[in-house]
Structures are given as structure tokens and as C-alpha cells.
Image 1: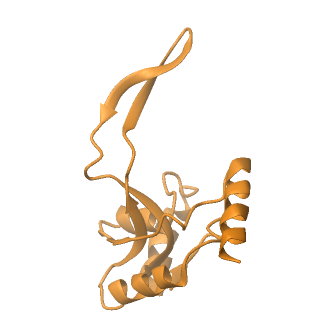
Image 2: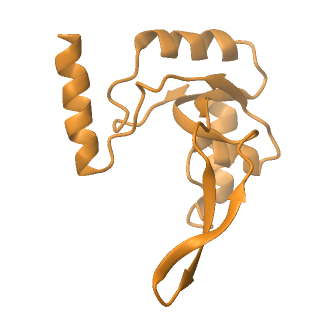
Length: 133
């Protein structure tokens, strides 16, 4: 089954095809993701606000996207196993599978598959759509 967030409304069809082809025979399944392109900082708070506490190595960090693809029975079992916890610590379907000790495949996604979350994202999405017309 493919699980997709409506907030990722600009996904290129070829990214979905790539995910399906990469995970079709994978025993666990996987998700679209992008290697973290930016420097990642941890913060600390002081009396004047947030300050850099530490720079985190980004070499093994990925940004999870959707869709995510898993076998329906395994995904259902993974979600059912955390339902009684109110899904605490579960941020996506992949994290539920990971909680089961599984390691989903990372399939390179697309920067166009952005998540429309903040007001500025709507303007960017609109500009992308106008550019495709």
C-alpha cells in the first residue's frame, strides 16, 4: 500500500513510479526521501533566545517524504502495536515500521515533492504550478 500526505501536492509521477519499482520486491518496503542538503544545527536557549549548541553531521541524515510503501498487513500490525500509546513518537508510517525493528528502504525522492506547511509554501507551490502551465 502507498500512503501519501495531501500536503505533498506537487509530487512528480515519476517519483511514485521510482518508489514502486524500488520497493515492489523489498520485504520491508520504503519511502521517498532526500539526503539532507543543509547544515543541521542543534539549539540551546539562553536569556536572549535560541543559539547554536552544536553542528550535527549530515552525511547519514535524510528528509522523509511521502508516499511511503509497505505491505498492508505489516503496516497495519505496526500501527496497531503503537495505537495504545496514542502513537507517541510515531511521526509517519516508516517510524511505525522502524519501531517493529524493521529498516525501510530509502528511495531518492524529488525536491519538487515539497510539503506545503507554512503560508510561504503555498506561494511557492503556486509559482511552481504556474511555471508548469
